[in-house]
Image 1 (cartoon, rainbow, N blue to C red):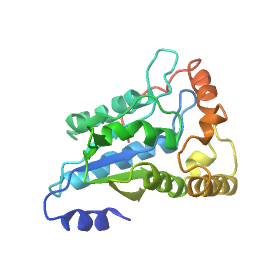
Image 2: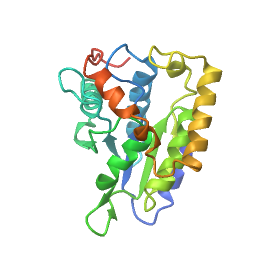
Image 3: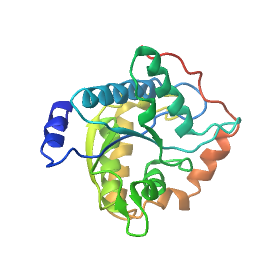
Length: 224
């Protein structure tokens, strides 16, 4: 889905829909991941595009992974988005911290569930959530969202093809291998990992948390 199709979808609702923008991070404490910064810019421009057409989307901040100073991924991204105020984009009051505990995609959705589905009756906070990430990663992300949070409609909005994350210092693999990794991730989400907890059973989350507690988030600078 592109932005034009997204606006057409939102305008098809009988009343102005409650919209959440959910960007999946490509950054952890340590070396800078340029693809992450590109996604931040893409998400801010998507917010601006929708706001300029009469909608008021909230930006849902997610991700734990505190660095050695205790700064979580969600709050790090919040600080990144706040810099757009200096460029005249008044989106700070639309930032919402959804969760600060997760280390990977399915765990993020599990931790977000109480923010998205509110109260004992699990009333949806949003009518539609726009997932933003690179195209290969959106495949497993959408599969997990379908299984884990059923009451809300999720749509995919691609920020790129994922070349930046595939060659990043953390993943350190070729682009074809990255595509294969995300395909396996998708197949897992559609079969044996429908509850989204397989990686945690392998101890992946705690290993990543321990690594991040020895590092710092990259410096934040004005987007270009």
